[in-house]
Image (cartoon, rainbow, N blue to C red; front, side, top):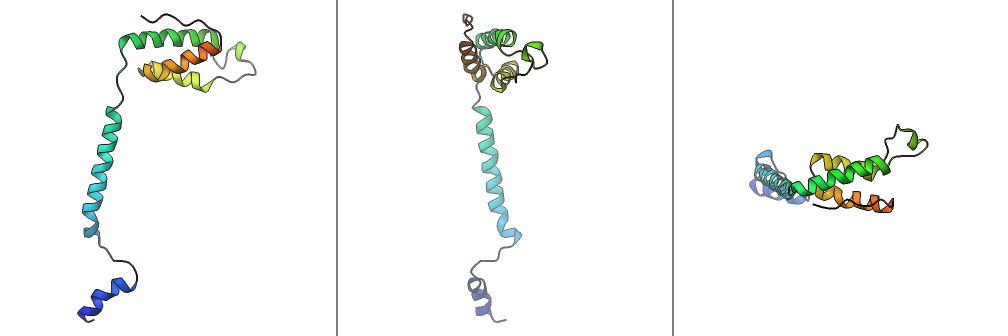
Length: 119
């Protein structure tokens, strides 16, 4: 095959043929960008203060006792537990008070329950 035909053949088919070696820098760059974006997401979650954690624990206790009963308890016969409340209680237990406090406050207010004082 002549040199001029080898140069023209990738253009004739409408795409450039690449080898694995040509793709290495692109893959490395994509992997680095993905790693940095994941690292940035992890670092954006601020830690909850001890006061927020204590308030969240109080809200969770009230919610579980009066509003979000256990699915196997007699008071839940025929009903379904609130998924948002269960998720908020779980997040509170994991230490993510900032995400769970607004949900628990809303659920308690909707149930006409008084909110505890923040300390």
